[in-house]
Length: 397
Image (cartoon, rainbow, N blue to C red; front, top):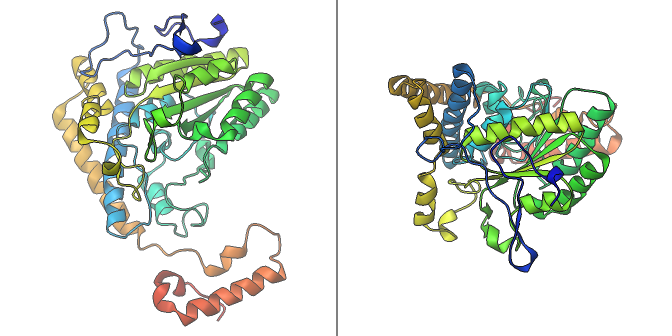
């Protein structure tokens, strides 16, 4: 394989081994071992204590947020949730390697990247409760975040649609002469969509400064990776499209940070795409609508719990004298209280008036939408017990 297909300077060999049946064997970059100690030959990034602490605390915060919001869904307070438990390092480590000018196009398990950029607990709650303070006016289902001020594109439900969009946006960044890239997150399951292939080929041919970041967490809902593809993961596809590619331990936040930082530098300097495959594991259910006990064992999960990304980084920080267990506990306790307090407060915020449902598409709502709105109002008035929140927001009769 040509050298142009591989990242350098992050401890990864340029060699790609051809094995049986033409398959390739791609090595994985890992800097920290599961116990937090660096590998003997590891070139761990020389980051500041301030940056390391922000990364570490963001992962802790997301773990707290996920736990609390799963409980809220079980209590019927929100309708749906997707946790990133076990995958926090992939989102947070990559986001930390970007600049605020870089655009993030997410799938639906990158709340860590959004929190790292400053999305507040109140904003998370407004979105998940679909209230009148949410920028999208409550029209998205929970966890479909978006924040224009943070350069975070609003998430959409269909899998993979953001991949060709990321290529197009990055092409625009290049044409405008911006010193910025687009990062596009997706899971290995989404890589089975046609949009994945269209997006990667477009980026490779048009030389778009985009980072394709695949979280390979082992499962596409209940379908394990070995039933999704016969090749060597997703990294081999990047090589096939002529894209610079690296596979990284997705539970090693320092390896993720190092890979993404260099990927960004290469994408900008050479105006080209880079593919990162982060090997991780979804410890939580796919969503609150999923029961993973039906398709995987407790023993399998326990093997990955021993590789917990938060504990790994915490151990590394402790070895540098940057972590205090008492402060850790106090921070987590404070975050639990903050999330709970905001949840209780925000769930009382009203939803948008029903009239706004036909706004924002046409300058003036057409007659047929107005007619449908009146029919909806009549229906809600007839069955107010079925729409307790909505019925209280009816206006104009």
